[in-house]
Length: 574
Image 1 (cartoon, rainbow, N blue to C red):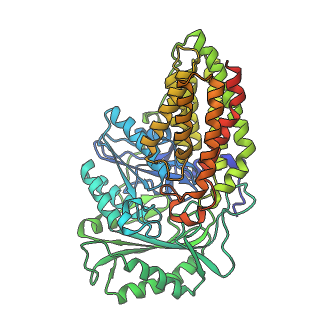
Image 2 (image 1 turned 90 degrees about the vertical axis):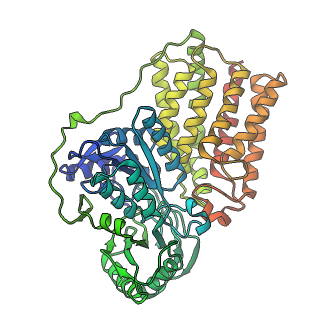
């Protein structure tokens, strides 16, 4: 378990600051993560990596010469917000464009995608390459749906070496994509990890068993098997990866980079015992081994687990893999010392002012804050149950994430209200802080919901049923466009769409705000309960779809609970 912490909510940030304090020659803290503390060549591409905290040395430990230029660090096992990604990318930018690279998880895709759009709008070229190395998370036919695990390292290393060599953004992207195409990983877990302050691990595996096909965010495996010997585990890992040689590669005589990765509590001696057999098996298969890695490279706090990655090399990727690097947790060869950067040179992201608002909108803003107070209390009351539901086929953090995001959202809304903001600005600030502090898919989606409703309400108008229904309808459309989920995918969308449709229909029929909302809230609860009969088609739960059958979606349930709890607030608005 995780034993050493202060306030559990401060754990990720205190770990980040401690890492920087221990490596000031390489790292500098910026809002949302870290960047190199040494100067990079002007006009070169900046490679910015990231994801949730709890995976050290990924991601901040891989920032330094020859490796990443910056790392965005979300909360534990939670994707960073778009604001955090934008902040780190701005600080890391060298004038040659930015490559954002991360594991293929829904929250990361949403937030990094938002940040990319913002960077491009400001004239900074930016591209994204997601890592999809985990063979257990989807079939080869759905390669682009696979998640990223320890194969992150191969893509980060090759792309960053290309950037260091002066390659253009297009060329760096091409290297990253080809490296990802040539990377495969497969892993097992013997027990789950424990978040700081938690009473128990996110999951357990029965004694003598192991979970096959683990994730790195506390997700259980896709099946359980008896724990084999070290050689037996090596046989399993190697045979599975050799079943899937990337297209266009002749296996016999091919060069591969094996990476045997410990997830947090497997001892190095154990890893070496397993790797001894991995090496034998690969050589017996006629493969040539190039600069292997054995150790903790992408962890999951204190998870007991092991994964094997194979990177199939070509001449270009081999050159970049073997290129020197000097980061806190990864060193290879010898790099030329670089000049230190003055922290004052690093651009920071400023908060915008409060736009003017009418008296009517300021009064509405006060009602918005009252609604958010109810929302926060509702989430707090149901957080444990939401976490339990989420843990059936996910990592169990939905309740915690909703609490963290809604609390930050309310604080921002109160501050904006005190500064004289109207309804739209209050909701926009609330949305930004929810997304920023919660991270993850739910953080991004609730940011979209609140922003959409705020835009419909505006900073000039009083509340009307029509504007509210228009805002909810916009939220429904924007969430689907943003997250790519559709009704039937077993997500919050399965509640948001019917809720919006019912609300709009009731308002169009002339019902009052409270009557229309009450009717729609009943429809929302029915839709949320019905998600128990669905199998997830997107998100982290998708690889464990069968486990979720019979259990409703946590995001759908939380939305239904919230809209029902807001009824008294809507009644007071009439």
